[in-house]
Structure formats: structure tokens, C-alpha cells
Length: 403
Image (cartoon, rainbow, N blue to C red; front, side, top):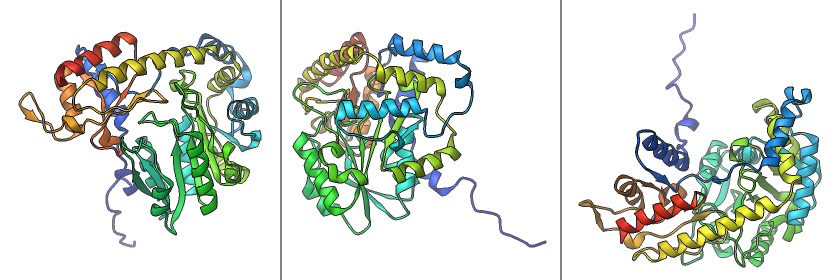
């Protein structure tokens, strides 16, 4: 019998280097403290505090009783949902797509994962403007790619420039991740900048993965535009990521999608067939009701977020040492707290935003996510997707500790 050396270690190296989602970790810690009887207010989780609208829930109830929903369905998604997504995309973005370009996934997160796995080869570089959503760099690394971070600041409006993109591009650059409205910064790129970046990407021949999950949550004069809609020459090298989670308060239903050139869409569907078969049929029926239903529920939620973002902005900018841009989209504020660093809280010097957030959780029982988690050290992310009462009480606590 041959003597073979035992494999080194137990867990695959690619998994060992994956960090836990910082936003979910903060939310879990806050919930654990609450379960222990602590009055903790969490600004951490990125999900609406509204219930899913009744007509969507009713559609799910009806689907539960339908025998077709009790069985496997196509990996790419129910044909009725793929058609509804295509119609919704043209209606809302002006981007005409065919249903066979749509792949329905278990949330937008899986749509992103599929895309990186299908596009990125080992050593490929992916341009990633920072601050960024926490899952992007780890998903890129899991595909064997190299995230190339492009830092932005309050002074630059947290928007990446074409000069930065051009300076970072190399022969290994395969794709750009573009997000507007942005998680975590709340920034919405002006339409002219979206078009200019799209033209740059088309001219250089790289792919663009554009995450549009917050497309309907824009405020004031800000306006969301879809990059492939305003830059048609990019359409054959662009993947649009979207879903029902944020717009319709459906984070737990886990329905997202990607829209891609047909060859890539087919490849991702083939891969998904080995990963999870199909998305839950009941959740897909609910998503159809969401996309085809009345828009008034979305308008009502957006108006509430608008009011809350202005309150959060007013309270934060009144704190000496905090520099907070007015959020234009999504439901986050991303203030710079560099002016607070070096202070002492409870006799301990706070030198990083990570330490500041830890101190606020301990001293004020308020959970916010440090900017280090998003590639934005010196900043912090606060969600305003929480009840009016919790929002006001949490802001009072922050002001009391930091003022």
C-alpha cells in the first residue's frame, strides 16, 4: 500500500482568508446584547424596518397552495418572473433586455457571486472603488481575482474619477464594480459621470458589474441612471445586479437577479443548476407581485427614509469633529469621524474608527459599523432604516457621548 502524505490542514485556503460579514456581525452582537436584557439600538443592519407589503405576502400565501410551487422549477427562474424583470427593467431604467438574459438568484448577493465566478480567472484584477460593500472583495478573492481598491473621500464626494480608474488599470484588469446609489456612502453619481465612466469602460474593453439594488431609493435632486442604458456600447460587457430586497422590504425572501449578455447568462444558469437548483418558488411568486404591484408602497417608504436621512444628517453634522455628507440614496450615512480620533472615552484614547465604534457600543449601547469594514478607515456607517423612535433615541445617545 502506497504511503501518501496527509493533506495539510483541514479547511481550504480560499475559505480561511474570507472575513465574516462585518455588518451582519455587528447586527448579531447587538441582538445578543438585547437578548441579554440590554437596551441596544443598532444602526448596523442594511435592511428596511418595514414589513413586506400585504399584496406581496398574499401572493406568497396563494402560491403555497399551488402544486406547481411544490416542485423543482427552472434554474434560471420562473419564466413569468424573468419576463416581469425584463419589463420592469425597461420601465424603470429604459434598458431593453430579453428574459433569457435574466438569471433569478437567492438574493443579490448570489447574483454577484455567480458573476464573479463566471467572469474572473485567477490573477484577474477587479477595480473596486472604496468605500465598498463588505462582500465585494471577498467574493472577488473567492473567484481567484485580485480586488484593486481605489480610495475616495468626503472631499471627492466618495466618487471615483476616470483619472483614478485609468491610473489603476493594468493588462490584468478584467472588470470594474460600479455602485450607485452606494452602500455604504449613500452617494448617487450624476448621470453625466455614469455615462462618462461607462464610455471609459467600453473604450478600454473591460467588464462592468453594476449593482443597482438601491435604484429606487434616491432623494432630493439626485437621479439614478443605469450605466448600460446611458452607454449602449457597454451592453455586451456589462452585468446588472438587482433584486426586490431593499425596494420592497423583502430582504428575507431572498430574490435577486442578474442581467447579462446571453452567453454569460446561460453559463451562470448552468453553474447555478449545480449550486442550488432553483430559487424558492413561493418567494418567486411574491417577487412577481412586487414588480407588478402598485408603486405607492415604494413611494411611502422612500418618503419615510427621506425624512429620516435629513434628521440623521442634521444631528451628525452638529457634532464637532464629524464631517457628514448629506446622503443622496440608499439608507445610510457615512460620516468621517477623523476629527473625533485622539479623544478619550472613559479614560481610553480612541485612535481609530474601529475603536470609536466599539466604545459607542460599550458606553452608549449604540451599534454602528466602522469604516474599516468598508475600506473607509476614519469613517463609520449608520443606517437610518430603523424606527423613528429608535433613530431619535440612538442619535441622542451618540450626541451625548461625543459632544
